[in-house]
Length: 219
Image (cartoon, rainbow, N blue to C red; front, side):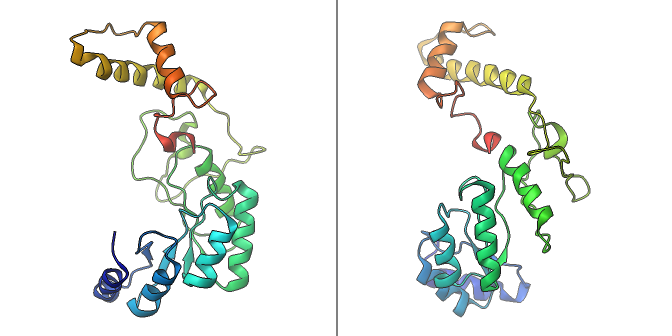
């Protein structure tokens, strides 16, 4: 992470390249005074907000740090209602909104709906890779720089639960292999149910889903 002075120097060095913004240039992101200095002295627009967990955090970024772009995340700020509140507040202060959404789960789909509903039509932040399989099908895919917006009620999609079950089995096998390989144990392709139950119990999130599955898969 950069110090405030380092971030200012970097911002100045990149100013000739006409950046859209410099994102979270200092750490921790709660260093609102430091963010304000970078924006004032660096000569480039500053964006922040993906680590904001409350409306108060968003207000501080806007009013104290004075960011040009605020980046609330629908999975962290209180869902769609929390996002709408943050967006409304930003508009009253003249701050642009660029929602944070590098996910492949309902967080991405919800952000797509939110962005489509905004007259500003901010770009959708999509993670840079493609999944081998997704429980949300091709709704998470981008084609020619655009993403389709589901039109059915709610988030507008049906979850293919078969995808999650198959992926869970693969990850359980790999995790068990890593855990037992040092002892010279050779595993069959199918992990015994007892071993699978141990892994789910040890790392489950209360719903029988291992929390070490890719975080973005569920958001």
